[in-house]
Image (cartoon, rainbow, N blue to C red; front, side, top):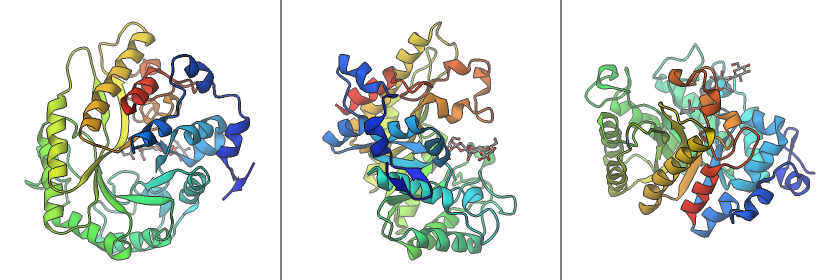
Length: 361
Ligand code: G3I
């Protein structure tokens, strides 16, 4: 075993000796023994997961699974303002460093998520943060990791588009208090500190046609027109599928084409699949529906040339959708029907994993 960073253990070494992951045994039979990252690599793509340094430290089998399956990862919490700058000017880099060390030891490239967000914010910080706060925050963080080879991408601004017209600041549709020029300024502050990494804007709820998708596209076009360094557009893709309604794949495909048309690369940053009510009778049916959701979504992504697919976790065990604060109200009491990720809560592969693998293939 190799000691890595602050007490972490290299999962490359652990994996070799660990028999607790049965993916290879279970999957050899149905021809899915390739890791997701290898399947992705064969078609010049990347597959990965959100990672929490705490889960990785406390659950070695899970860390091994991340190591086996992922060529890319995103920090689930380590770079959120409340974690990394809990008091003004006082920085806690330990969680971020643990994530980076784990990824470096396991040959995973890492996305830093997220610098400006209305959530996970310390009480003293206004939203939107004053530009002087942004400048101090970015100088410390982007400066520290400027030469880091593992961390290659930053979610500079997260979820800045409002949820509806009513909640928007103005006709640009951004959150209350956020002018479109503010987003430009935030990106420019970042680029002045480090313009070598991939800069991403990230948002949810833009996988279907509608008001939010229009506003997101408008924002991206504005940033590109104003020469902002914006390399990729993150589509979180917390997807809902149901027996009762359908997903408009054509609208999503058109949206991806439009993004590419303005010179930005779409990436999938937080994919998971939840099944809406009415729930099927059995978990087997539910897993089939989840897998079908993955397949339908990824088929469009790959037709449009998307090369980075990141799920928001690898196992249902750690899904945010099972956290009491975030569990959808209509599914309260049906926790065992919340199975949005490729592995179940016992770290066994599900049909969703097979669907992702087949989509890469
Ligand atoms: O670390 C504390 C722990 O010390 C404390 O005992 C515990 C009590 O509940 O809370 C722990 O912090 C939690 C943290 O996750 C780490 O587990 C917070 O309460 C909890 O609110 C936080 O939730 C995260 C949420 O963002 C807010 O930051 C979720 O894990 C994370 O999956 C979720 O991720 C977001 C993306 O950043 C943006 N897109 C949506 C996505 C899902 O909400």
